[in-house]
Length: 279
Image 1 (spheres, helix red, strand yellow):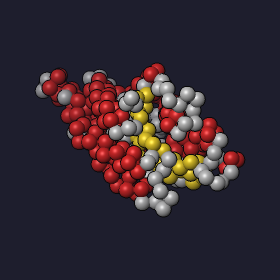
Image 2: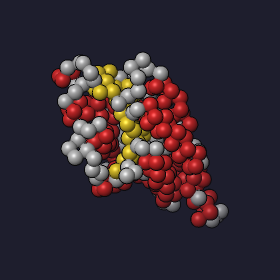
Image 3: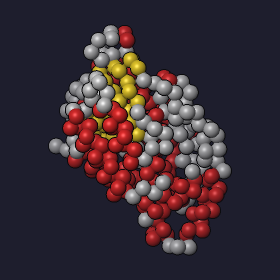
Image 4: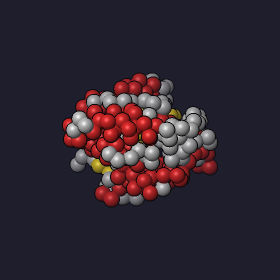
């Protein structure tokens, strides 16, 4: 994983050109040090979280929530269903909207943006019809596997367009700040941060052009993950811990509620939360 971060950061962010060819040796040395820790522990596979939440509000006419994306959306790294971002968002949405919420999670650990077409097709083939709101978390694997940013955002835009055309609201949690991963040191940390933030910015542009909203996970969560890595990251030092997922879910929940009209003054964006939507 550390070598992927190094290669992806340099390739995707243009880091080699900025630092010079001589820096390659430094990057590989940093990657060698980092790989001893990153992924050193086995992150638990995501527990299944699909189902109905908020049963206290009944079982009829539930809001339909779907999650798409990679391991962050799937919830890899935690053992309990209630600790996954899908379960946290579904429970939170049910409490705010005072309605039951039916969750479907089609996210896949290790997925890149080129898997979104399959995930969207899976969702739209459901007999219940398109979800009311879809939350997408994608981008980290695009950086680590050197998927060109132009291709990454093209694929994301196509997925958002299909979901919006089908009638779903879409909220995208943009690429997280890979520079917060603790075993990654300078200059590799700087390159990882630069590549992931550049992708997040490009994701924001294409998502809002297609009528979706974005929440900048890097801006909102990066400082907290960097300040408290042992609490926010799981046993593999790469995937979030239960506390990390709870923090991420609470960052996304207000926007999910807002697009459904369940949040006070839902038509107002919150610049401090890095929300974006075209006028």
